Image (tube, rainbow, N blue to C red; front, top):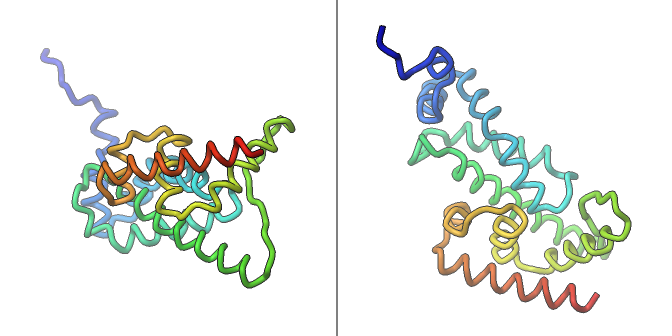
Length: 185
């Protein structure tokens, strides 16, 4: 009896490329499986970029609606995760721009920081997100993805659709601003 390298489980769980092809062909179950496979990662990216979960559901819904509409344009069907992250980053940029406009129009500044259970750490987290809020999204995003999210610099470059050198420069710029800001607090 020869061993079959593809176990029944491996046959039951299609890879991303197969799911993408099926979803493009109109298979809603395939898109649902893609969503389930990648939603947690995308939600983590969105949460880290926004600094709160206030808009998380909206951005996630917008991201996956955009993805469903544009799935046929995915160049690397075996790697939908970076593509989904790029869509989410664009949605976050739009959300952050709306936040800035709203604050300007209302003349109020609100701090949206993650919930921290340790009161001593809360001040530092609030200060960090105040600093990040002042950075341009194109500088903030690479730093958050790399430093907070733990993404590699090449992956950050792919998500942000810029060169590796640009990502390194933006991460360094953000790091300087963060350090300066935290030293002042």
